Amino acid sequence: PGYDAEAVVSPDGKKIAFTSIRSGDLELYTMDIDGSNVKQITSGLGYDGGSFFSHDSKKLVFRSSRPKTDEEIKEYKELLADNVVAPTNMEIYTCNVDGSNLKQVTNLGKANWAPYFHPSDKKIIFSSNHHSTRGYDFQLYMIDLNGENLRQITFESEFNAFPMFSPDGKKLVFSSNRQQEKARETNVFIADWVETDDAEYANEKNLKKHITYLSSDALKGRLTGSKEEKVAADYLSKQLKSYGLQPYNKNSYLQEFTYKVKTDPNDSLKVKENTGRNVIAFLDNKASKTIIIGAHYDHLGMNEHNHSTKPNSKGEIHNGADDNASGVAGVLELARILSQNKTVEKANYIFALFSGEEDGLIGSKKMAENIKTLYPNASAMINMDMIGRLETAKKELTVGGVGTSPEFSKIVEKNKPAGFNITLDESGVGPSDHTSFYLKDIPVLFFFTGTHSDYHKPSDDEDKINYYGVNAIVNYVARIANEISNQEQLPFTKTKANAAKTRPKYKVTLGIMPDYTDHGDGLHVDGVTEGRPADVAGIKEGDIITKIGTCDIKEVYAYMECLGKLNVGDVLPVTFKRNGETKTVSVKF
Image 1: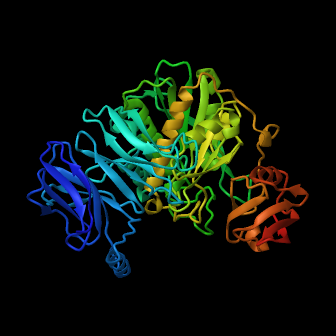
Image 2: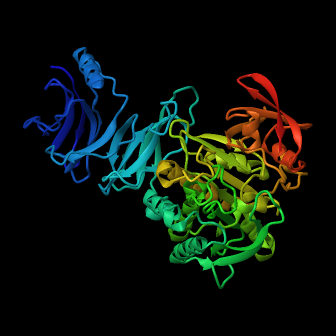
């Protein structure tokens, strides 16, 4: 009597696995095909069910909802006493058919269920909403038996579940509400399963290795022109060479440039000559178009160039894990994926790691100045700058430059990771290296997880990186790059906000961290630097600046243009909103 259900027959036809409440809890059992030899397989408190055999009939995979806290245990037992369960939090487990070698495979949170063995019995496909901010968005994922190499398989619709492979592994069947004619309509779909290898996806271990090394104290913040910048450049060159990529200029992966840098922020006459180096490689697929994928690898060093947002921080190492070891790691992984996979893409690729970005996009300007001469078929530029701080709950990612080609919006939306909240910014101009290529009439995309309180401070360290987020974004960029490569044409469009603007040169600073997203109601302040004009005047994080002097400030680019008109010593009224109230303060620049 009671609940005996969720039965499945082993591939060899000898056993049946099922879930039963006969012990007083919902456990897994097996029995011979004739119903004899019933054995309890699991014994942990919680709901174990939805089991399937491995293809060799030696293992079981199942989903389990196991309460851990006293409150969870109490609630589970009370519901079970009323013959009710509420398994909203489930993880994937495996064990041998006799119950030995029990292992928890996932630890993702939320609902991970409907598992099924890959025909190799080395991987598991399952449905999960761990990525979702709303709960209902279920996508298919694949994971190795040891819990590594989590890969997202589906990206469309709000519900994908109950996956099963054909015995030969060539077909995948699953349920989905895609192409529905009415709300919540679910149908069965069959897809060809194309087997891939590790070269098809970003690897979190690789990303962590690159970010950890580049943002280590040993590299002292990778200041442009420093000994440590050269060490970083050597590391990057060796990585690109190991993938079999060609040097950009045929002889070397390095592109040197010189420029003048201020040594005293208060005296524009105190400058020194500085030399930086870009690291650039080329993947020749004999294609008619070339896509540039880039990120800057320089950071602030020990604040020798006075760009830190932390007062009196000269001499402190600014490791720059998010800014921008995260983006560099993304470029290296994409270089590995696109050079080592089994596919010959319909585009050539340039992998560019810039220096001098923190001093004014110097390295990317150097590369862009003759890009159309060296590579007249340069079709698009993708820039990753600060992709390491995805907030797990919100999953907010800004993609800039979508207005620089009429094809970009649909490409970006079509390929977005499940559960992500994407903010689209049309402008091709921004405070990062894609701007240099936009100004050469090349369509650009810019990926950015947002500013934070550690921006340009010594506290931007590796232990704060969200590796799940970096991994998901890199795979997202890989899909977008592939989609761009398949476009017959990728027209360039001047973006409205900046079509007639020139890049201003700043003599003054307000001392804020601006939100680069266009909210439409003014410039949102993400942070304020202590002791700078905004802080002295009483402007705070969260304020929305709407006017500086006679300049109407609708977004970051109007703000940048306005700063370009000001001089040191100017005293102007600054109007802003705070909690719905409009305030005006006097600011001395």
